[in-house]
Image (cartoon, rainbow, N blue to C red; front, side):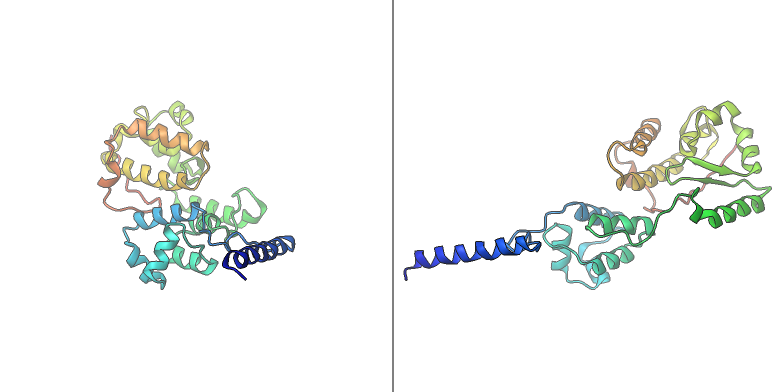
Length: 253
């Protein structure tokens, strides 16, 4: 049997096997030498590694994988296992929400359930927040969404807000971040406004990162950036990157 004839027979045999596997529902997308093409997971992984200031080698060491394997994961050449994704999320110090996003980007179901504060499942949490706000008196306390939309507040918060801005202004800006950025809002009274604004922008960018284009949060971020009018390298001037909304606000009138 000649080489060409053997090659033709081998090719027909391979096609027959592939057709059979597809017929019984077996995924053969990775069996023909093709690379893992999902770029969402690499994008997320590269983003969070950069935010945390880690090299590929350092993160690979923390996660207990080889540098070569990690490089393949970040460049989309290898598909991660669910356990590796969970480990990487832990090593990156991601919140439960962002850990879910990392899992989803890798093609896995979210590990942690998400519920609206108004849902029945969250009734106990809502009652705890109510008590916290009440106990916070006479000091101000507010509850807001990750992108700054005001959900609830205590009486002291209203008193503090009204000391600096009018009720009309508060109604005009139901988003707390926009209220902080507005010239008619808190901006003239925040002595550390530049530093605060950079931290808020950084946090909102983290929130927006996992959302689909066109989400209202993208428009919020654009409005905040236009209002801040910072230099293009504003993020490099942050003292540290953090995905937790912990801001120091210095008010004076």
